[in-house]
Image (cartoon, rainbow, N blue to C red; front, side, top):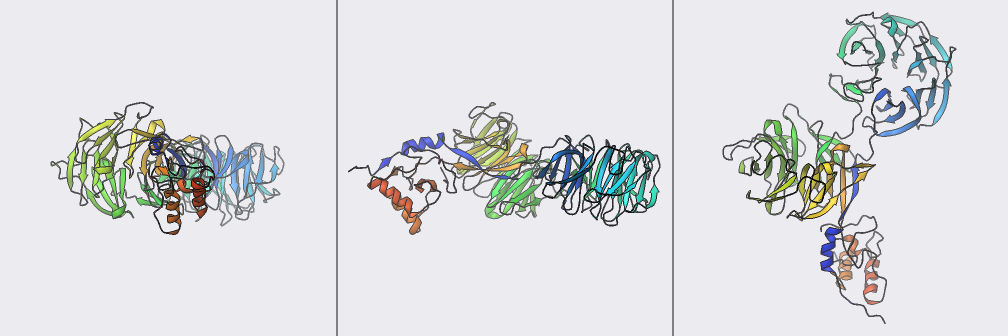
Length: 638
């Protein structure tokens, strides 16, 4: 009979291996898709769902959401695109033909080709569909407009235009508006070809044109005409009466479109308009990007249960992502109140959010719904006021701790906004970016001028610092955000080194956290840690939030975590499973067969190993290590 030792000790080895083998894996990314990479938009159309079919600067065709999420790509290059009410896509190909694809992206048919006959083109430049599903193609070389049914059969032809560049269709009423560019006019027709009216003449006045290149019609029948040479878009009613104009300088052979909400979009052959891939002009005149990343450069992220609050660099809004339904909601957006938010922090226990309004030297206090409750200016500490609060943290008593980028001091405020302490200064802090509070009230400040982390006691006493410029262990390249976990570990967003570094409270290195998603390395500005120990990074450069789960080192079988494998371990597991006993710190440690489930079979296997010559637990055993199998169990705490 084989006699086994009833107690197998490995406590000291486990303590060492925990740091050497700690590993983080990507658990969640938001948005989950990889945004399309575009260098320019040459032409586009808007479908009935408000999504775009884009002709990019390489003439490739892609159907995508306004947030650059690819719906499908089409296996063809083209010059212009159109969609109908059934979701079919028509591409004016570089081969001079019209190519039809169904809503799923499957090829259906093609027609056209070079020639002078009916259904042939010399220099087709624009394609549109009407409310009945018919397809129209404009040929600027021939000076004609042809109408086809959805299968490519010719219906009728308009001739007599002088180098026309674009046209628009009123889908509701069936009117067709052609930019007769060479004649500096707009011509309106019934869909059966009957002319209704013509307006415009050469010039720069209202209702006049120099190079009118495209037309679009909104839901109320108003017509927008873009003029490249004059750098403007004019709006007319259906009788051709001038209404208004919008200046958009620097256009070249522009294309325009209008969505169901009345937003006007502009692209041109250069590929960018006013710095945007696709310029969006709202009905109230506000301008922005029609194609934008869902997250606009997040710089801070704060997890709270199934939600993550985050601050965007571009808009300086605080928004909230709900991980359950994938929704995003604005929390703070009040231009009349806020100057420019540089940082924010949550106080979950009290249901509060604090934001640093840096230019105005204030801290703004909100509830978690974004309702403003108070504003603080920092009076009460040596008679000084805040100048430029740069980063915020919450201590264990609900006090707000802020570091000021101007006077380079740290201040502590109570829940009523009274400044109760002020310390440090320019002899220690130079260019602060992040702040966090750890165990015992210790305060950590990241400084990008010295590429270091500074540690202060709760009373403000400077204790020590660590770090220097570089890419090695414990070195930094613009350390930005800083955070702590329940065990007192310190996490630093090492921005220029594309990583997060983890240290103990004495600055001793524990782990390097890196990740590559869709070929792009995370480049964090902000970092935070949730109660489970998951790390949430604000990946600013890639416009996404990344949650990383810690895969801790453990020994399989040591369920009670006492450093030995003995009878107490199967008993511990049985108590947990059947007698409401405490949960193991590391669920993987009692998954003896590593099948991702905890059952009575695990306890039986362990008993067999200890007393009946059964097989040993699956790795990691007997040496500490990381679970080789991905499952939903995991470990919490070190």
